[in-house]
Amino acid sequence: EQKQKVWSEAAEAVKTSYDQLLGRWKEEMDSLLIYAGVSSAVLTAFNVESYHLLQPDPTEPTLAVLKQISAQLNGYTFIPPFLNATDATAGSGHLTEAPFQAPASAVWLNSLWFSSLVFSFASALLALFVKQWIYEALVPGTSLESARLRQYRFDGLLKWRVATVVVVLPILLQLASVLFLAGLLVLLWTLHNIVAAITSILVALVFTFVIGFTLLPVFKSDCSYRSPASFAIYAVLRFTRNEVLRVFRGICKVIYRCSMWLDWATMIRYRVQIERLAAFAYEAYDNMPTWRGRDQNEIHLYHGDLSRAIVTTAYSMTADKKFLASMPVVFSDLPPEQVPKCFRDILDFMEAEWGHWHLPDRQLLEDPITLPLCATYGIRYMLARSDRGAEWWLHDAKIIFRHYFLGKESTEKFAELACKTICHYAAEDRDFRLVFGLARKTLKRLYDKHGARHTYDTLGHGAYV
Image 1 (cartoon, rainbow, N blue to C red):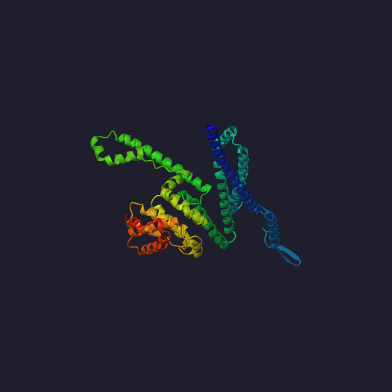
Image 2 (image 1 turned 120 degrees about the vertical axis):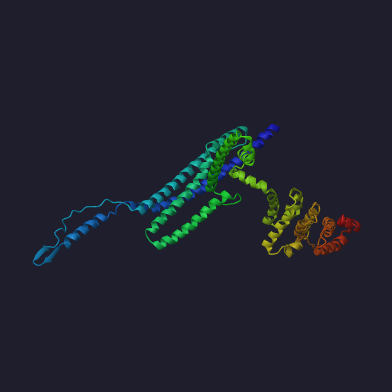
């Protein structure tokens, strides 16, 4: 039974990821086919007109004949009753046509636009193939036989690099768009300089944004402008850099081995350089990570900030007070410096949402306990830190204390926790006069109402322990 459960869970996990992958590819191909269809229609309309520039004008022979007749007529003068030929060579020449040669601008224009059309049609054709591959790769069911067939199909997708084909198709469409705009500029510069200059500026701006959006994710892992082109550039850059490093390390290994044959005095003299050479050749592991590996490195580096952001973002996106109420439960799972940042995130959200750091009066009347109780737990967590009393500790504690207030209602739990915690905090930060005022107000309101939870001795012990 346990084995069956393991097989079922593994099969279900693979099926979920597999279906999501195929579904994402299918959506990408559907969007790509729509864009490729529109692009091909536009390009065809332009190419129907542009290819005529590569052919001689059919009216040119007629014009040449008319010019020849006009020249012959101009060679005669009529003086009644005589017709005299004033130009003996007029009309005597043979009508010859120079071989037609298309202008360079027409050649470049058609080369760019027809290449763009080819890339557009190629991407659409390959997208149809990919949709067929996806259809054949679908495997329903979660039985062991279905799981084996699904794994077989998945291994085939990896082996034959279907993902690479999916990545290349949008790049082909982007390249088709670039070629079309380049051909458009060639056409406009042959027609009108002012129109061409304005269009060139606009195209340059478009290219600048496209290049920026493409290159930023290559160098910034947290950049959201990710695209197949960015992935392709990063893959080429990673392969090139790692191969260059591998070659250099191989050379350094050879040099280091040869250095072992040096005499003792020379080795002592260049000992530092030899050690650095050996460290680079054998101990340095600074190869570029993969596209996903780079993300994992950043996540590991900023895991504390990301964990804190999960909690605070849940509240900022929904404004649901249940996330404030449950936030103290995860304080122990966060690094110590992240707890004050939770309240800083809440503060930033309130300022951006309502224009002030505290909740609106309506929400204070509706729930005067959740936020101050959360702040009380935050202060209690700060009081348990070993660095309390330090300058940075006082600053962090004040950030949390800004969220503490007293409403018209309270509970026994809040009264018990607030009386002891605020008194203890007042003893730790004696220069902060506001905390003494709120501590007095807390005692006056909550202690008198729920005094059975504390005595003045326990409160004093909590404040000065």
